[in-house]
Structures are given as C-alpha cells and as structure tokens.
Image 1: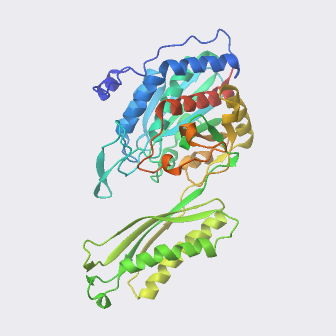
Image 2: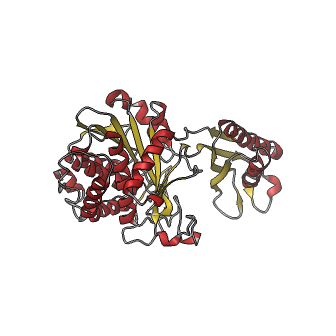
Image 3: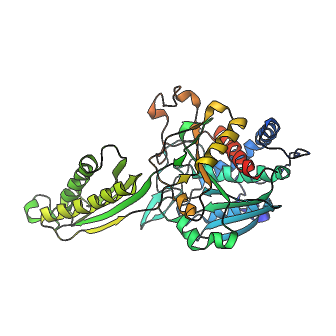
Length: 447
C-alpha cells in the first residue's frame, strides 16, 4: 500500500489491508470452469476480512456527489498499487484506472462513489456521523444506497483480476464515477471525453446492491430500470398572520393541494398498463405555527419506462402547478421540471452469456433473470457510446429473511435503498459481488 494511502487510513486499522498477497494462478489459462471457481473462492476467502474493513471505512466516511475527494483518493492509490495507470479528476472527482494485459478487448468496470444527505439510524458500530453543508444547510451524510459496497467490491475485483492475470487478456478500464445521485456524474465524465482519452469499451459491467438475499444475483435482459425526471417548484404567496388567512395567499395550501392533485396525473392520465410514478420527497415552508409564509418549496421525482409516458407525466406536473397558482390568484410560481437521464439497457446476448458464466461459479438457482426495477441510474449515459454491457443486481440481506420466491417475510426487517436503516451484511454481500463481477469480466477476456 502506498505511503499516501497509509496516511489517509492511519488510525483506522486499514493500513495494508489491500496489499497483494498473490494466489498462484493456474499454469495454463482456462475459461469459466471448476478450477476457476476454486481459485476465485480461495482468493476471496483469503481476503474477505480485509475487504470488509475497507467497506466499513467507506461507510463511516461518506461524501456527497462531486465532493468524493477522500473516496476517490483511496481508490486512485489502491489502483496504482495494483499496477493500474490512474488518471484523477475525470468528471471533477472521478477516477479512471487502466491495466493492460496483452492484446484483447477493452472492458469497463464501473462503480459509483457518492452518498446521500440523510442521517443514519442503523445503530452499527461503524455508522456514519458525518455532517456537511448541503444546499446552504448543515446535513448528515450516509451511504444509504450501497455505493460504499460498490467501491469495496470494485477494489476487491481489481485485486482479484490482477491475481488472475494469466487467465485473461486485454485491457481493464476501472471507472470510479462521482455524483450518481442526481449530480450528473456520468454526464460530467462523458463531457470530459472519457472514451476519447481512454478508448470506447468493447464491454461494460456495473452492479448495484439492494434489499434481496446476499447469495443472489439478478440480471435483466434489455431495459433494466426506469428513466428519471424531477421537479423543483416554489409556490409564491402573500404571507401574514395565521389568525387572518383571508389577508394572505397561502403557499402551504397551494403546495398541499399540488401534492394531492399530482396523483390524478398518474391515476387518470397515464395509460393503466404502463409504469409511471410521481413522488414528492421534500416540502419546505414557514418558520412558526402562527405565521403564514410567503413561499413554499416542493421537490419530487418522476419515473417511467416508456418516453411517451414520461412526457405525459412531466407535462402533467407543470400543468398542475400552474392550475393551482391560477386557482389561488397567486403570483407566478417558479417551476423547474427536468426530464433526467437515460435508462440502462442490458445487451440481451451478453446477459445470457454472463448469467451462464455466473451460474458455473455461484449456485445456479441463485443467479437468475429478473424484472426491471423502478429505480434509475445514470450509467446509461456511458451506454450512449457503446451497448455491449450488463448491469446486474446483488442482494445484501440474510436469505432467511425471504420466502422461496424472494419476497421478504417481514418488510420492516429488510429496509431498502435510501432508507436510514439500510444496512447490508458486509462479508457475504462483498463475496457475492466480487465473485460475480470477476466472473463476468473474465468470461469476455479469457485466453
């Protein structure tokens, strides 16, 4: 481990945890088979405690989008230690590592680094207590979406692939992306000409952890998630005393009606057979119970699968806000509605081949095709340049918490992403993630 990284992790107990302790590679290269499975399992078993320590360090030190300087620094130093050529500052805080190993395909592995403005309530002994300024206010920060696990799996996969260099050929492109949580990190890396500088990948792989069993991997063929949009609306009124509402134009009343009326756009305008969601996540107004304020701010998200549905929902958001302002006889509202980024599409043929390979290394009944998710992800921005990619899901909780169909037995015991209680079980989650990602990469690079 490099001296600068040693200083970063001084006092954390992590010094040296990612230093290579090579496992002898097979004398002759082989595709995904029992020998490969045994080698990966042995290497993972030998290093899993170190990787868990790295995960817990990331978890305890979350950073918001485009502020991931500590996380990016750790990733950059570790990739250099493993022999990658590293470039920092791509997309502001992003990192790209290149490792050449003979003639072969260029394969991209991507992880995101940013956390969320949320106070952690897991009670874990490595829980985040970090606070920072966000939009002019002090806020807690938490890795509530699993990007800490993504980074740990990312570094562990790099280490595993370096150890298995005799089994694959080509060039690895490891991309640590900033600001996935609405900060446009992928777009910023594209604007920095990431593929002009490092090449357009022949293949790409990414993963996301979520509230399913930690021994499972799910792949979606084709469109795997939703498109995302959002809105930020300030209803302007006339403030005054709470005892004399007739002398005011109440923006809280407008905001409240807007929140309720939005759902008629979903229930009465969206085609019944199509997916579409509008959710309000933040309402901010007022300072005291006896003061009617002069403005109220409402922020929310819109998700959809088909572009025509998205256009209808976004238009409905704007029209509903304007109608409520007109009804109240209020000053114009400040209405910002955005269409968001692209959905992620998995190449069907590569999805089949990746699932088949993973099924040779992980229990075959635990690797399966699944339905699309309603969440969104800006990895799709990278796929505007290439399409041969698979983005898969890995579970984080004890399998005993789920029935035979994968449904939770008690939803309160399996908090999902963006919950203040989201708490992956580190070791088995990382083990499954590293095994799956290593297998996916070697499957397209095997000698």
